[in-house]
Amino acid sequence: MKLIDKKDIPFTTKKFFDENYDLITPENTERFQIGLFDHFLNEEEVIEFYDSNSVEENFSENEMRYFNFIAEVFESSLTQIFIEIEMDELSNSKIIEILNILDFEDKNIWIEFVKKLDNANSKLIEIDSKKELKMFFKIITRELTSPIFHFENGKVNLLGNFDLFFPMFFENNELVNKYKGIALKNNLHILKIENQHYT
Image (cartoon, rainbow, N blue to C red):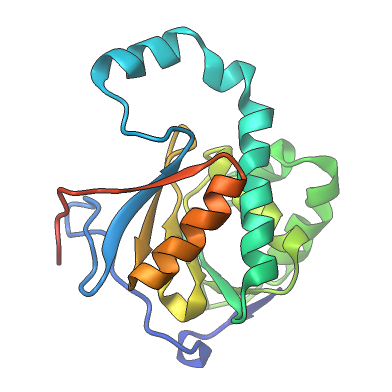
């Protein structure tokens, strides 16, 4: 992995939040959600799901679905994968918190990343391996911070969120179908958000 300057990436990063930090849909994209269910949960289903505590009971199994998904995305990608992270959020205490929650095999990757932060202005990371990608994905599944993942030269974007539901943005239907296929193979579902707030 390496930190890179924005001017060195092959696409323009998008604006996903308005001045109130509400999620918006960038121009020329469509908003979707990747999650565990094949439909949007209604209020009763949400209550039932969380009352059963199934998020905690099955967290490792559900998290593994995402790791398998992200590994296949890496393997099928013909372009470099980038992660955008707010460096201002990485206080010393946040760095230690993330280190403590990561699995043993990821700690060295995180430490190597932190070492690169000295005098770094960039908030973009170029990913070189599945292990690096998986480690950064754990940061969002475990709700430690919310980086943005850029795939397909920025034509597909995945944002951090809560409860193993993540916003995704696509520039065309061909990419939607590609990622839906990978998601389904890993028992995940990509659903279109119909009511979108556009920039």
